[in-house]
View: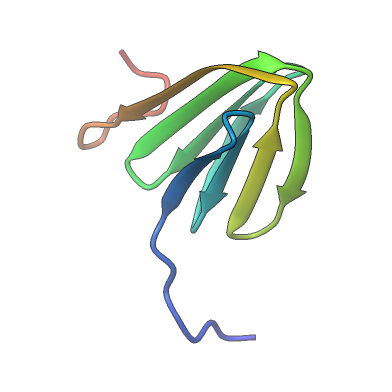
Length: 85
């Protein structure tokens, strides 16, 4: 099936307990209390208590936490990998 519309990426924090990524993304790491996602030239790290992966589809990811403690968004420079310093 061919996509009719190109989606832009968006990151939304909903009710201070969930993180929603809309648009193309790559899941880099997933643990019991954190998720690391790459979307375009940005890496989003979200951490908290009791992570629940609500949705993980082609262009939508929703991660909910009992308590969301930390969200960090880092812009990658040209050619920089997700874990380069």
